[in-house]
Image (cartoon, rainbow, N blue to C red; front, side, top):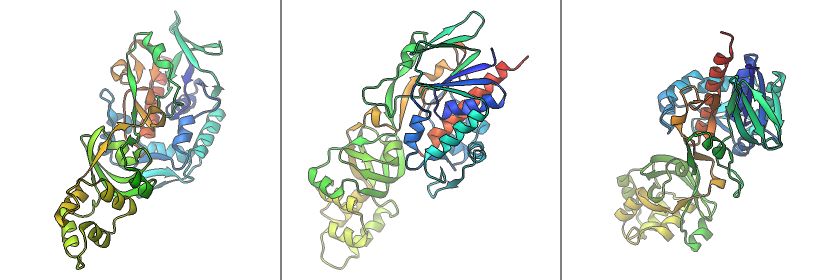
Length: 394
C-alpha cells in the first residue's frame, strides 16, 4: 500500500507527477473535482499554448517570485529542454516563436492534454472525475485517508496535492482546500490576482476610437519593472503581457515609441516641413497607430501637445493611471495559497510528512510566456521523484 499514491488535481503539476510515478511502477490514482482533466490548461491554451521559454537558466529563474524555492535547481532538475522532450515523446511538435516562447504546433492545449491522458492510461494511472477533496486523515501506520464530497474514502501511502489557485474560477466560486489545510495548522496566504488586466478610467470618446485596438511594441514601466510588448485597449482598461508582468495600482508610464530616443523623435517632428501641430506632425513622421493617436489626443497631459519637445517627451513617458487589477475570476494566475515556509525543499509539507503540494496552490508567481506551466511541471517532477525515493524498498 505504501506504493499506492493519491494525486488530487489534474493540472500540469499533477499530471507530470503522475507520469513520473507511473513510470517508476507505482500505483497512481488522480482525483479531479471537475468532469474532466486540465480545465485551466484548456482555458490557457484555447488560442495559443505557451509551454516554455528560451531564456537562459539564470534569466529564466529570475522570472519567479517566491522565496524558499530554489528556482535554478528546480529548472535544472526538470528543465525546459526536458519538458519539450516530454511533449515530443507524446507525439506532438513544438516551435520557437519570435518572442522567445515555445508553443505546441497546433497552438491549442486540447491535443497535448488528450495525448497526455492517453499516455497515463496506458501506464495504468486511474482517474476519478467529479470527486471533490474534502479531508485528509493520517493513519497509525503512516498512510493517509482521503475523503471526498461524494462520501468516498481512499487510503494511500503518500499524497500529492495539486489543486491549483484561485484564477479563472466562476465569480462566486472559492477554493475550499485552504480551510482544510488551515485546520491542520498549515498557514495559507489570501489569494490575489496575478497576470491580469487593470481598470483604467477611459473617456467615452477615446473608447469609441480605440476599444479593442492594440498599442504595438510599447514598454510599460512601473515600480515592478519594465516590459515590452503589445497592450490591448479594452472597455474597462488594459490587457497584455506588459500589464501582466509589471502592472501595479498607481501611475505607470508608457514608452509609445520604444525604438526611438526622445531626441530622435523630436528631430523627426522638427523635420516635417508643413506648418502642422505637433500631433499632426507625429502622425506624419512617426506612423503612430490608431490606439496611440487616440491615447495622445484624449488622454495626454494638458501641456504635452503644445510643442514638438513636449510631445517627444510624452511619447517616451506617457502617464497611465492603473486603478485596480481585474477580478480573480479573470486572472491568468493567482498569488497566495500555501505559504512557502510550510514546505520542504522536496515540496513535502513540514507539518504533514508524506503529503506534498505543488503548482499554483503554493504562494509563488511568474509572468506569462511559458514560465507558469514550466514551474508547475518542474514542481510536479521534483515532488514525484521525492515520493518515489521514499516509496522505494530500503
